[in-house]
Amino acid sequence: MGQLKIRESDGWLACTPRRAFTLVDVLVSMAVVAVLIGLLLPSLSSVGETAKRVVCQSNLRQIGLTLAMYADTNGDRIPPSVFAPPPGSRVKQQFEQMVTLRLDASRASGDSGWDGLGVLYQRDFVSAPKLFYCPSHKGNHPYRRYADQFGIANTSELIGNYHYRGLGPNESIELHGIKPESAAIVADGMRTRSDYNHGNGFNVLRASLAVEWAKDTGGRISSILPAETGVGGSSTVTEQVWRMLDE
Image 1: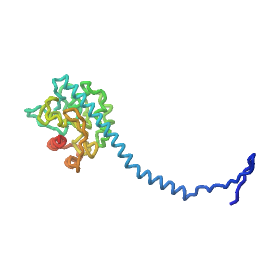
Image 2: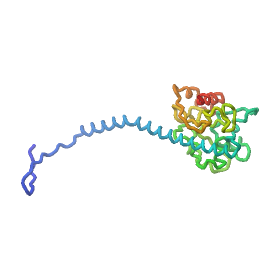
Image 3: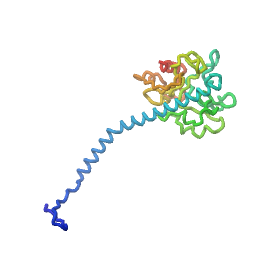
C-alpha cells in the first residue's frame, strides 16, 4: 500500500494507514475477557461472603452489648424463653426453636408474645430489627420476609437468623454466672441446614461477650443438622451443637 503525504507548513510528512480490527481480532478479545471474568468471579464471590460475615459479626457484637444492658437492669438475668424453661421446670425444653423472636397468637404467653432475643426488641434495647438477621442467610427466614411485621400487633410468628441458648452449660440464667465464660450463648442458626447461614462455620457470641468465628472443620456440625422439613430439628441435636461450639 502506498504512502499518504500530509502537507505541513514546513514540508511533507509520510503517513502509512493503520490496519483496521478484523472480526477475528474482536472475537479473540471477547474470549480473553470472558476467561478473565471466569477467573475473577470465584474471588469476587469469596470477597462478598467475607464482607457479609463481617456484618454478621457486627450484629452479634451489638446483640452482646444489648444483652449486657438488659442483664444490668434485670438482676443480671438474660432474656427468658418459653423454649428454655428454668432449671427444675417440668416443661419440655425445645432448644431447636430458639431462633424465634415472637410467638404467634396461639402460642404467645403473657401480654407481649416476644421471646428470647426478641425481648431485646420489645424492651427497646434493640431498635433496628435487621440486627437479628444475617446477610448470608439463604433459607426461609430472610429479613425482607418479616420487615413489615415488627411494628404490628402480636398476631404472627417472627423467626430470626441467630440461635439463642437462653442459659449457660451450667444452667445459669445470670450472665455473669455462666461458666465457663467461653461458653457460646448466641450463634448463627442451627435449627436446620437452611438456617446454617455461612455454610462453613459459625459466628459465635460467648458469655464473655467476645465474638469469634468457629470453623466447621470437616463439616462436623453441618452433617448432623437435619434437612429442612418445615418442622425443625431436635433439642438433642441443638444441645450437641452448642457443646461443639463451646469447644
